[in-house]
Amino acid sequence: MSDGPRPLSPGIESAPAHVAIIMDGNGRWAQMRGLPRQEGHRRGLEALRRTVRNAGDLGIRVLTLYSFSTENWRRPKAEVSFLLGLLRRFVENDLAELHEAGVRVRIIGSRADLAPDLRLLIERAESMTAGNQGLTLVVAFNYGSRDELARAARALAADAAAGRLDPQAIDEDMLAARLDTVGLPEPDLVIRTSGETRISNFLLWQAAYAEFVFTPVLWPDFDRKALEEAVAEFHRRERRFGGVTEPTACNVGVA
Image (tube, rainbow, N blue to C red):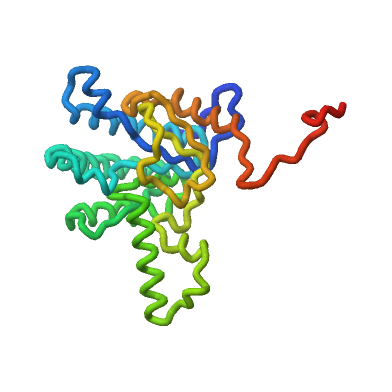
């Protein structure tokens, strides 16, 4: 990990507080090189480690990575098994270093159908790093935003049915409090690699006012330069959150 923040490239004033990344392109990266898909996933794990270091260097406070979706179970069993093994190895091999660097690890997504040893591994990663004050690394694993919203709705419905909650009192804050991301700031910037321009059931609620950057860089090739370019593009955007920009003397032609 980093010994401290390094300066951003010229022209980048600051990093957004929360960056979320859809890590895409491992399979295509491998195919382009005549390699098995598993090698693409292995190189993708290296890119994940690199991005965690770079995010910390740039002063990003929360980094959310979409590692395994609820839809990924449809992939061939051998590939799913390999991906699960990568998660296990990442936690087992990297947790001590992340903890030493002050990274707080949080895993979002459904845990109901995960193997007991994997659930224990996730719980250990979270409990060990819970008190850390550095970068918050959020790993979206077995995560799908529609599933998350459905689970939140069921929780609200159960409270209402039990008389603990007046249905008429349900508002956005109550729903947000039932989401996996409770306590986290909403993402400022969502990046998707590999040139695809969809969000694939990722943070549908939380990213309502995020800026999106779609880069052609395949995930195994994603590096500090690619991250800084996305941050620079973020700063070129005008975020109005549903409002309007007040005219200034310059843009109304007044000297």
